[in-house]
Image 1 (tube, rainbow, N blue to C red):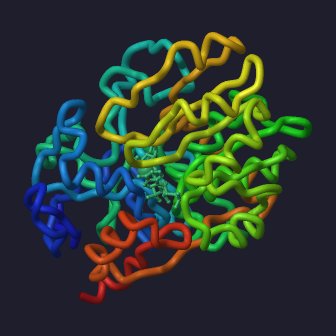
Image 2 (cartoon, rainbow, N blue to C red; image 1 turned 180 degrees about the horizontal axis):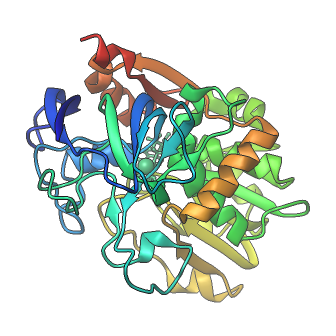
Image 3 (spheres, rainbow, N blue to C red; image 1 turned 135 degrees about the vertical axis):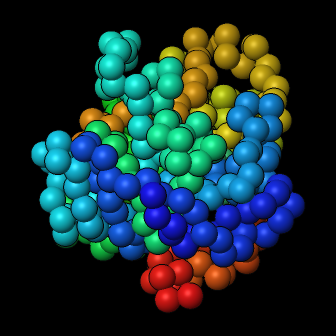
Length: 353
Ligand code: NAP
Ligand code: ZN
């Protein structure tokens, strides 16, 4: 075991501050990683502030971060896929019980006992819970490490590990491609990835945003159309037009407005995770056989597929690179939807601190 520098929160109301955390020595099947960049996901903020208390209460200290890019510094004797120096990624999962058979073979996020990257019981007993990527290094089971195409800029590639797979997976499930009219609600970290990926898959993409200032950006990101969601006339004009809408909003909002935009058999998939229930009018779904679903990240096989797709299409997130010492300001700006479009922490700022 060794100590690594990290940023942690001591309570739901404490700002993130520098800390020292234990990391385990590399076991046979572990990969040790020097972290270069870590994206800042809105889930980090929800978890740090214990906003998901009823579903997954936060254990403190909490070290968030699950959009990790780094270089391999050591591998266990049983590791075959990675060698020292490889550019690798780690997303929302770091470990699982591998001894038993699992349903949903390629959807590790649904296996009982899967360890998530932070705030999950630590299977190695290094600490009470797992500590995430706001840290200079991490040690991860080989099976949860991803190969990152070397042509991708590492700062922009980091958010692919959560925002990328979280949007790629439901897009594939909805068979997004040419001829599909797709909507994206909320142009934040997830939303802007959904626009880039939907555009690359050949769909006709419309962005729904409350922020007039984001209209030009949305088009540059690949949107064919942009609707200001607070304009009732503009919303009415596109009623019934969509095959599929991905809702990436982090706060309470009216889902019925988006159900009204679906055509017959249309689907609204939620990836945003606001803490409060969102009321739905049954009749909005009934007329048109419409459906509403949820989606959470994606399995490791599909995450690799997404990274390879992004490598082929040169897709990365649009990032504002920050030193880790600015993380608390970054959270406040994220809450105001004032980020273009993901913060990515340069971990040199922590190594040199
Ligand atoms: P983000 O960067 O903060 O983006 C959220 C966007 O939602 C904002 O940019 C804003 O877009 C819109 N928005 C914010 N407040 C709103 C409100 N009150 N009403 C309407 N729209 C609002 O967050 P993110 O990192 O993309 O994450 C989005 C959500 O997905 C979070 O709840 C996060 O926890 C969740 N998440 C889920 C998964 C999963 O696996 N399902 C994975 C990662 C994250 P406009 O300015 O364009 O309106
Ligand atoms: Zn995330």
